[in-house]
Image (cartoon, rainbow, N blue to C red; front, side, top):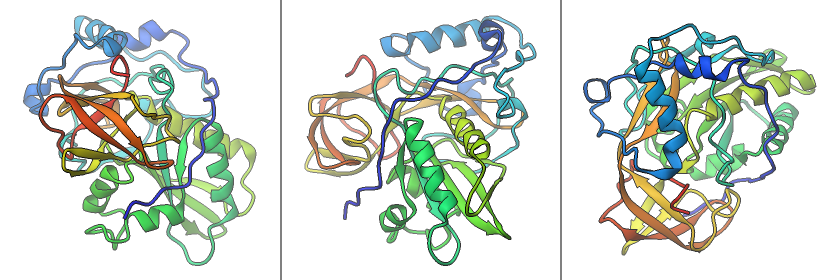
Length: 325
């Protein structure tokens, strides 16, 4: 049964970047995709990714340097942010690779599509006021939010999801409802402990504490800014969670910005650059293997597409927008 999550979408607020973006870009060190991940070589002929490919080309041609300091005082820079890799989705290997993290400008939003995040409440009783406030802040920052009740409905029959944070459950969530990030909140005395999981790229970030009832505005802003930064490692994408008679059901719809006639590029592989601590830094799509065209929009968070070119879309494929739109 298809379950539409709670959704909201707004224009993404501006956020300061590194003082010297060029120096930060040069600090990227690209992992060897063939030996580390076994992925296909990326297709640099895809126009929508030209800007990022130029960044990575510069990184390959230069030696690693210390990343420039950031004037984002709300959060640590990515290379200093504690995280723990876990086994990610089959398409995205979770093995760490040597590299140097750097701040990069967001790829989301340029195509008019909104990334989705999910909130989970692992305590007794009603959802705390702090999570409601956080949901509103995330929506105001341009993210589609799958709320705790909608998430629970979406994964109620998913294998392995009797424990939400089991790797097999996280892999199931990555496919449907396919949020880029999962924020899991649990009681911590009078506060909340919120742990963020990147369901698509296999990362678990260290916990953030919020006042359970009335978190300070700055604390919410800090957390939202951190989530926005974590989304920046890749352009907008979604996945197909079911196929029937040549129709592919996608975990994205009107709330994310999809409409009838939109086209999505299918990537069966990709290349993930990780920092020294294993944190994802940037994802490069592999060669485009197919193109999907949206034929129906079934609601806020679901649409149906058919192949326009290519032969198949695997459950692990990542579907991006850009020149395919």
